[in-house]
Picture 1: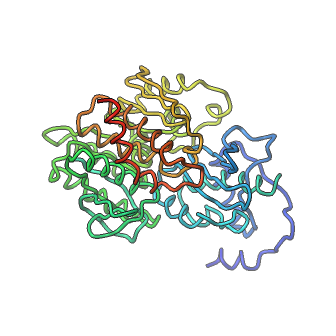
Picture 2: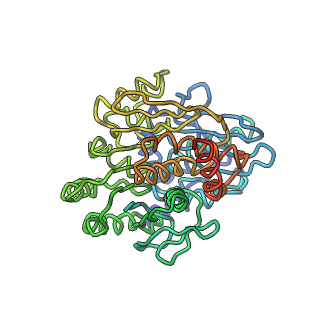
Picture 3: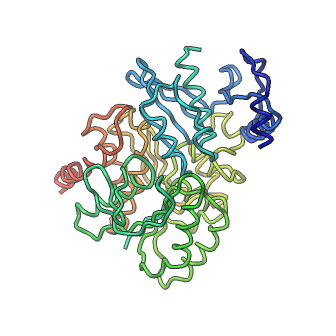
Length: 138
Length: 284
């Protein structure tokens, strides 16, 4: 309840004030949770291309873009940016998350970590972030 | 009998029954599960192969799990208490929350059976067995390239936790396989799914396969699940080429249906009998 109130009354920023970079996903998860508890507005995003370590790759296939992060892959069509497939993972929330994201424009899609709660959902979030950057042509 | 164990994104419950294909759905225990991804895809592909060769259909033990882990609890509650009642020849573990508490009791239950069934694992089932150091108790693992990094990392309890040096450097697949076998963190046979598929047995490469090359298949959710399901069926039929046959049939399906990255996996399942028929005619 306290966390909900903190979030509700937290100062809202129009633009991100900064980006935190970590060497491992475990640190990202811990920090993400900690900052949320403290009432900060935080969003998990893919790291800038120059500091990526090879776990989030984008591949062009016949009019579609697929982004990979570890065991997770997410694909959208280049024209409309609709999510057409999600592949990989072994945790039971992934089929549910995939169902929610299928055929949704990536700009309008909910974050996988808001839909699922497993480690696979976190990996999917990283791939999702990279794909969203691609959609914005970053 | 083939026993397929995994969670499905359905209301909390335990669903036990033979796998029956009904159009683009899988009927188990009177419930129609959409064949979209995960355990239902694995079971549907296994059922299609069994149906084509007219062998006994697989029995499914599904946990309806809405991402809260309760379905995983129910599923292992049944498997770890009663799997002997199903007289399994093959047990395949698939999507689930890899809860460590269920791992060792599962191994003990299998060890208590008069005859050890062949054990196959993918997805959460594979993560669980690797985490409790029981990978080599299994006969087949079916990782993709990302999951191979996880098997190669002796400490990682999930693909999320693979240490960065394994991802940073360009490490040949052979070295990753060696690392996995060295620490007994993979099964006796390992099928590595990807642009090139590899079959390893006890750290020896048995075969690799890259044709037909269908790049779109990597993007399609479920194209790895179909392999796990087909391997379960072919192994049950004591097919000496079970792994290779599953991989080649999977690729031939992609070619047959002219798949693209937006193709849905149910189209693969539907095409299995047709592709099997052609394949059998060609090799006979």
